[in-house]
Image (cartoon, rainbow, N blue to C red; front, top):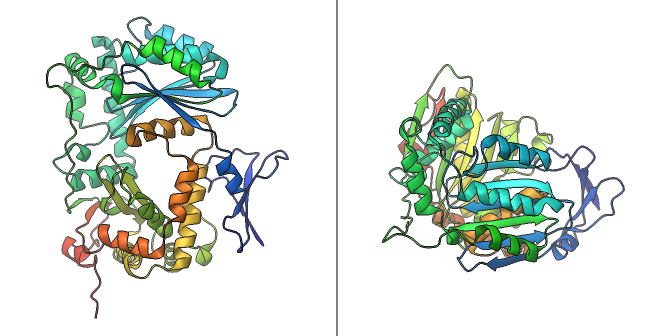
Length: 472
């Protein structure tokens, strides 16, 4: 039996300072035993944690709005509405001005926030379980009665413009936004979440009102909660506060998402004044509901990630990570798979010195070719274990659980339990990884985005020719 202690920074920063994780690996066992040690807490095996996961209950209201919750027994809870996207200024409602809304949230000791991704928008509140009724009431106010006054819109216009300036300083975000822009050019997924600055300057109140009236319909909304939540109580609260959300569209105004076309292409933003090059290469991945999603997740776990701060050096399990250490290929890299309703992006993002761009691109594409042709049983076993650990680690706390519930209901119509994910991961074989990766990667035109001192980045045709191996 071997024991590996894993720092909480590796565990996605989900463990607090009094916690650390210990992994016991017994080769004869099917699962590693994960021990979360905290103040004398008893150990629980990975398999036991899957069996003991609470049930996610789902109820649909008469207007089509769905209510989903997971009761964990925590003293706190997170409740959120999650819907298909729009960015609205969350600065007061018709019934509660901004000051009153903030005072009520503060008096509860709660946290009210929101985020927007390319396909979803969420408003959420984390609070004491006893304050669930008030939290649902306030969220319903924010969703249904946002005031959208001219003064508030002008104030938020400046906020958005400042955020756009801040994003330009985050080169990872810039690079990945550029990747979407070229990969999905001419389609909605090609737009960034914040949108172009021209929109922020010219958007009118009527534009926002029309968008809310067209898109904020009950069947597109999920009210999700996790923690100290009673599902029947949550449904009663939802009926009281969300039954008025319309489910009807005017005429033929039902929004239909058109498929987002992937285009193999490249975009370069050369700036020799920057110290490092930020580069992403990707192929079209699988949509969220595709049966190919799990083998692709395992494939990404096999490639893994690396950062100069990692320990392990040449003993890292990922082949690409070992090469990054031994050959000093890059400062960091990460394999990613961004899945959307009908498509996805599977890629590798890396940060490197200008002199190592060509080498890092070569070995990144080589890692893809290995997935398509020579991936081994041990590679897949390692990738599966890493993926399982990641899935469990991402659900530490009521807020990530609540977010997971909302996204699953919108994407799949149900919450997929960890035990089912585990079974799907276990079913992945080396042959399956090779076949699925060949389907999505082998001899496909990639999308490439690069920012910084990128003179040494190979031309597109050369990168395209590295997407297959000649076989004799």
